[in-house]
Length: 112
Image (cartoon, rainbow, N blue to C red; front, side):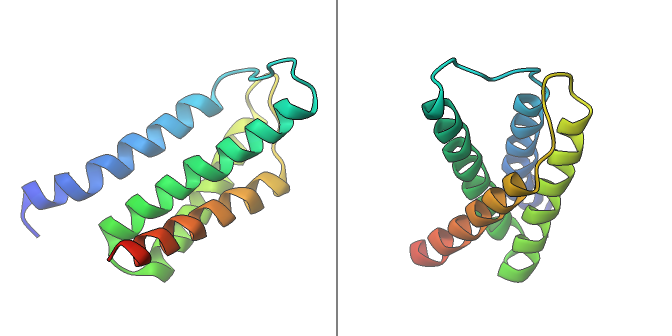
């Protein structure tokens, strides 16, 4: 694979993963909207990982590898949040992220 092709396929993955990491570094994302706050944050989890899944399958080309990489990143993201003051790690968020990754893979399949 040429270096320009490598850059064009992997740069979006790295940039998006960096964005996820940056948002995970914010101590508190509460909006004081009560139940809506929780719903909005979970929808955001799902959506950001759907984009990651789409980008990963585009870069890797193989759905099982892209899915494994996306879920692994979700797990490391939750571990990272464990060490951020005001945040916590939750297995349910890994499950939501994994569902988002799978949705991204399905979207990629549909777009082909």
